[in-house]
Length: 297
Image 1 (cartoon, helix red, strand yellow):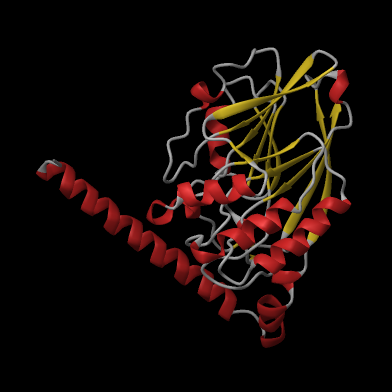
Image 2 (tube, helix red, strand yellow):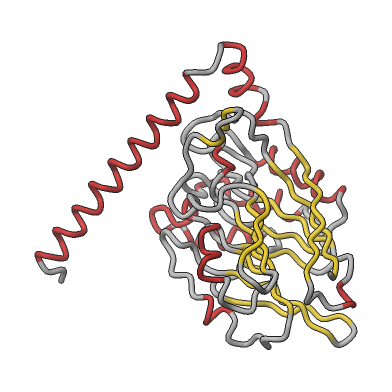
């Protein structure tokens, strides 16, 4: 049973969270309303469907020679059920397959609120994605709504993805290892990087999936080479010469693109996401499919 003090703290936290949410929502709305009518129409009807494929070469010193040139495709934040449906996901699968990935990584928020009755259709669209060495995923904060993480994980699994919940999977080539690891979400899950890496040799190369990019501040002290994240949508609305209007909690420090942290060569990449949430708009922040080529150096 929760004691009175704890109950009061919880209530206070909820009020603070609600106030912060309303303030952020108001900020987004002001940013949108401030756009000229033509730009507003573009932000609502054109840019959210205008996929941008980013090609990024990641030079990392610990990459085993056997994995030189590995192609990793990342997508994130589809927010299915809110202006993005199974048929959109199937078209995304075609774009993914044209990149001929060795590995596909999904970094969370498959659904906006719940899987519902569309689970089989979502799984079928996910199953269309093809990768020679496997497909891997973590959950995002929206995937936990109303305890829906189990249903989202089942949908991803049915679509051929290995869902990593504080776990790591070893890929092997020519006797050398590369690990794909994944942690739970910072908001509603319990990410545990130590548990995630407990079977990994510290000398092995690790590619980590974390929905929330700000978890990088914890990861930087561990033997991880690259972290892929989403969550922020890049701000979704970015004003020229100003940047994002608002980003969510746990994505406030690292919001978009590539970061190099620490002294070991650790790199973080924050994907802008595929779908939209709260407001069905994007401005100066197109949906992103990222194709990484890993190179040693």
